[in-house]
Image (cartoon, rainbow, N blue to C red; front, side, top):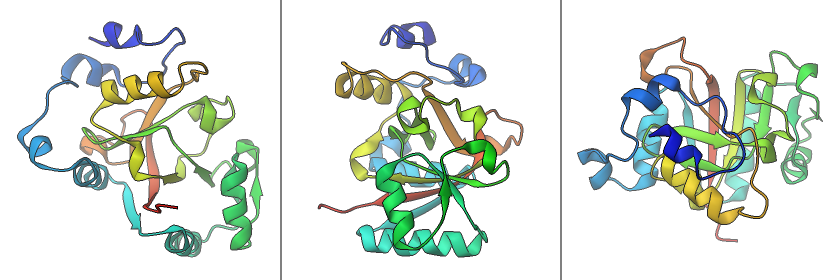
Length: 202
């Protein structure tokens, strides 16, 4: 099945769960998924996997929640590679660096490609990491996302990515997930993640 998914791209797709690929039918919708909206399903699976889901009704609320996270985690500086996100950090006077190695135990503030409702994972690529691999970043993330980025599952997310960026497909596509995903502490790409879902029609 994974070989079929990989044919969607001419570029490599890295660091996706081997066990998940072999043992989980990514095309099968459970009864819960059929009855729930994508945002509800994602939030349930993301939170149960150890993530922190924060719904934000607008950007001002998102900035407030970002400040709360900064205060709660006692963050002095963050890793940020996106000019738009840097402007949000400037709003609350939080310093940042573009080099992940500067803060080996710190937090990275990134956008993402898609939010996969099936397992509560977050797809990111080289477009968010400035061509770096996710392994180069600390295990702590704050993700800024929009409701338009929900996908049913990995296959759906890959197809959407192909359609949206067919002329500029990213490399280093991978999924990160909460540190308690499936109650296995050793699962690859398990991270400490805060997700700011910003529902702002503007």
